[in-house]
Amino acid sequence: MFWQTTRFRIDLAEPRVMGIVNVTPDSFSDGGRHAGPGAALAHCERLVREGAHLLDIGGESSRPGAASVSVDEELARVLPVVEGALELGVPVSVDTVKPEVMRRALALGADIVNDIHALQAPGALEAVASHPQAGVCLMHMQGDPATMQARPAYADVIAEVTAFLRERIAALRAAGVAAERIVVDPGIGFGKSVEHNVALLRRQRELLALGRPLLLGWSRKSTLGALTGRAVDERLPASLAAALAAVQQGARIVRVHDVAATVDALAVWRAAGLTGSSGGAQQ
Ligand code: 7PJ
Image (tube, rainbow, N blue to C red):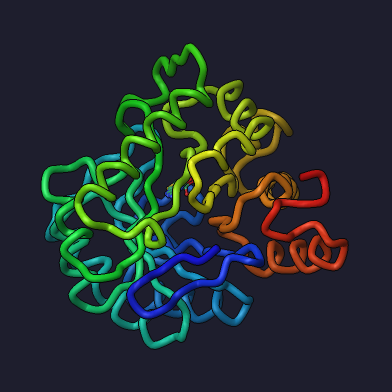
């Protein structure tokens, strides 16, 4: 399986590590230590040295209850970092819900749009569809970041996530976006209780029925805190276990803060024969 993006056709026969670059002063997991283009770009360089196969650059925090950011502010945060990151030799994704940010980043040459709203904002689908081959990650979220953790509710979380992602894939295909440009993500922690996230972990393979590569983002998330009793800066072991569990069950891209550790864990998983595109020996 491949992921077509602006400059790279990414071979997903082996799982890929997407390194997270937050360009937000309020980012929950790094305290905004990478705010400002210089520091953020240095972080991009470090993640590539550590073995990141892709970089995901975001300028708006989507943690529960986070304040939203104006278009101008988000552009000012993200564009200089995207521009520098495009020189580093790996695909560059921009994590945004704003069509204007998508357009400007794609005009600079960004490879991928990663949208937690799955291109539902007016103009977002068009921003991606009008580009000849940019990649896109469609993520499921129930509600919006301001309120999503208040009372998440599903009759069947897997069925609802699958139906939503199937509809979004169909909308993109109808707008002329080739299937090979699309990957999908169930959106761990986005309008989901601990039980919902754990159900997605246990039943992740069912999402393979969508026929597109799965991207999973478990890194440092609060469900890992609930499972281990650990604070956000103590969740590396849990994050590694979640990344490996995701890969074992067919994920092709893992979105992580701790690139070096994840690359090492996957190297051992690969030696054990557990990283094939079938998602491991059980299948
Ligand atoms: C995700 C994301 C995720 C995708 C964030 C955090 C919160 N994009 N952006 N999937 N999470 N595709 O990193 O904890 O899980 S922001």
